[in-house]
Length: 80
Figure 1 (cartoon, rainbow, N blue to C red):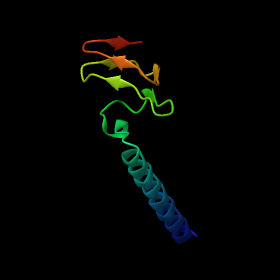
Figure 2 (cartoon, one colour; figure 1 turned 135 degrees about the vertical axis):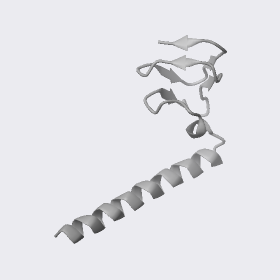
Figure 3 (cartoon, rainbow, N blue to C red; figure 1 turned 90 degrees about the horizontal axis):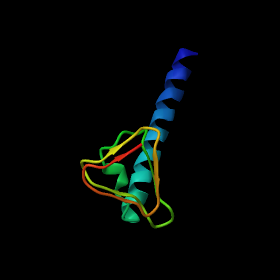
Figure 4 (cartoon, one colour; figure 1 turned 90 degrees about the vertical axis):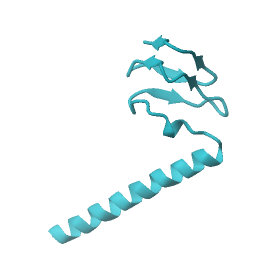
């Protein structure tokens, strides 16, 4: 039984990795590069159709904040 669990675990991991790769490829095809920015995964940067948030590198966004759509945040700003 433990061999079956290992196989299922490996298949599940492969499917998740494939899904993430497909998601990134789709984002690149739509010219959406948010997945490469080095924000914390808990920050919520959400596209609204073809509009997406634009952040300067020195911006602080609180983990519980959400930026949706056509938002521009300039240098040294903080979102709480």
